[in-house]
Length: 67
Image 1: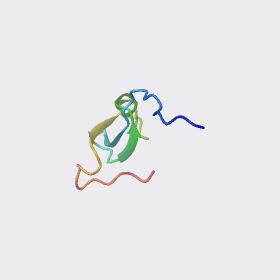
Image 2: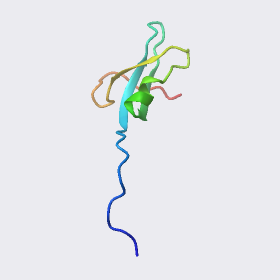
Image 3: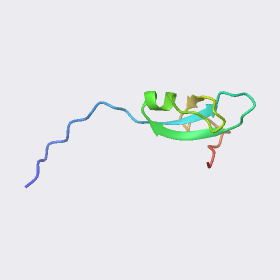
Image 4: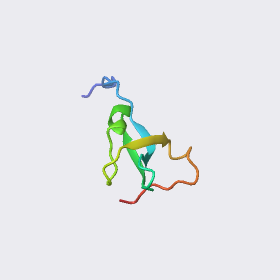
C-alpha cells in the first residue's frame, strides 16, 4: 500500500524564461528553466551575463538559440 498524501514541496518555484546576452554586440537569445537564482547566474557562450527579458510566450519577435 502507498500513501495518498502529497509529498512535501521544497518551496522552489521553477520558471521558464527567455534570456538575452548583456553584450550589445552579441545577438544570442536563450530559453532556460530554473529558479530565479539559477537563471540569474547563467552566462552566454561569449562570456557575458544573460538578462531575463520575460517568458517565451510574452516576448514576440525573439527566437531562442538552438545551441
